Amino acid sequence: MQNIIITGQLLDQKTIILDAPVNIKNQKIRITIEPIIDKKKNRNEVLDLIRKRQKERNYISRSKEEVDKSITLEKDSWE
Image (cartoon, rainbow, N blue to C red):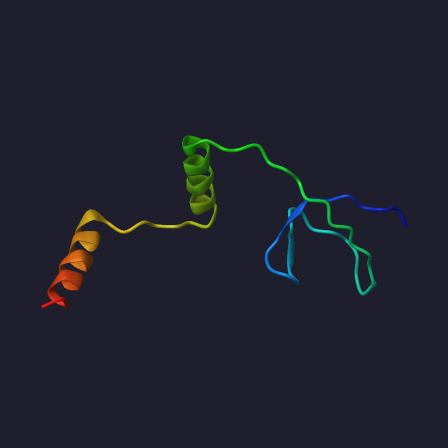
């Protein structure tokens, strides 16, 4: 079997999320961690990435009215 090189993200000390599926079943594997230094993203790039990911998961943001109601309820709880 050939070695596979794939990127991913280390979620916590024991969990890795791969950027693509790997077709390997029920085998012990060896993983080498090589940090990738990403260039700094500017604000617009980050916002574009957030919007893209929200769209991919069909995220629906709250309306202005919902946000206003939430703020009012929170402020009312202060009294």
